[in-house]
Length: 101
Length: 391
Ligand code: SF4
Ligand code: SF4
Image 1: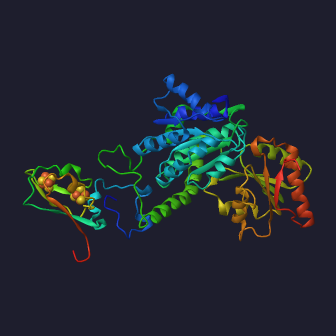
Image 2: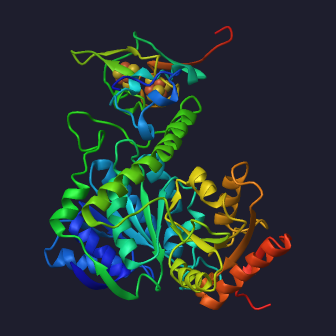
Image 3: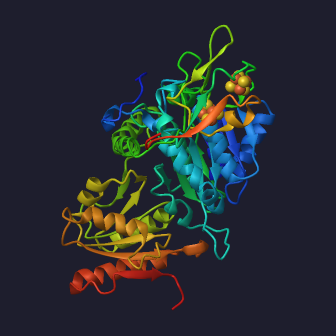
């Protein structure tokens, strides 16, 4: 029982007491579709100052091995807009999700 | 080893013999002596237990849950309002499948505030997912406590267990008791080896996460199964205990039930008084018997019904009211067990002894006389009765 508990698990096979036996699996839980607004990264304005990165509550601002900011992790970004607020260079814009946008 | 101990001291001695990893407790009458005696064992180096003196019973149970989840064998004691303050955490312990052991020294629940014995505290917790054992004497409180640890920690169970016994009557009265040797107790309960625990570096786990509708129901169903499994494990542990001590335990005790025509069902110390009455009635040729429930959760449905199917009339005595206008909790459980299994047996409810009201042999005699008149007349009369209240 070291896998993520599937949605169709039968009661005899579920983990006792609701414990999670596969530690650190929250990345498997895609929360991106909770967003009503999406942050958009304007690469031409970005100075790579990385002030946005530590403020994201969902670690959805991806940093590569060389320490460079990459695009958002839209599977987990919940669209809170904190990163937009902290960016000193206007390099993040919030756009509504869904509809014709 | 013959000793003279109060019920509280006997349980504290059982805890010393087991030497649990953690005890977290908050004092409340009449259970205070359990952690008090145990704290002296800690201070005197008789145990290696981490003793956590918390600031409330909610914290006591919370600390027990945290410790047990970490992989520690954990114990506590409480009564009445203390148990009530643990309420939320009782459910967390059972649903998280953490076999904490609790000495539940029965005392009336407020209000009005009262420090004396009845069963309104643990009866309220009867459906909290804890196994509940009830004991008549100091010996049974001690023996049940030791068995409770082994029952709760069994791999098919992993549920917390309450060892319930009567406040003052059992907790404070000093009786002769047979203690088991320390090393035998330790060998009997063995080491606590949970399959999953937080302190296991090799297999890290998360405990107590949010459980959404997609999984919650399956978790509750699995928890219910553990309670169903418990009946067999309780009997297996009792058999092992009997092999060690010669003292026999079952789901309930049947006293002179073989040919009984009238019977009383009762829990805890009142059974002693009632047995005395049964003996007197038997001398007069009356076929009276008694059932003393030891295992109340899980409830021994088929067994109780089978034991009562042979009698003509039974009175179920409750030292707690359900305030449901339909009899006490033991009455409703016993009669629902009898439905379809012991049909035709006349069953009546008596609420008795609330807030420590003395229960004399003459009170119990009245109940048997009532049963005999029901058998004679065939008329059940009033089903819901109060025994010993001033009319
Ligand atoms: S919008 Fe919020 S969640 Fe999304 S990347 Fe920015 S800070 Fe993170
Ligand atoms: S704060 Fe703005 S400028 Fe700095 S790295 Fe983030 S997006 Fe780029």
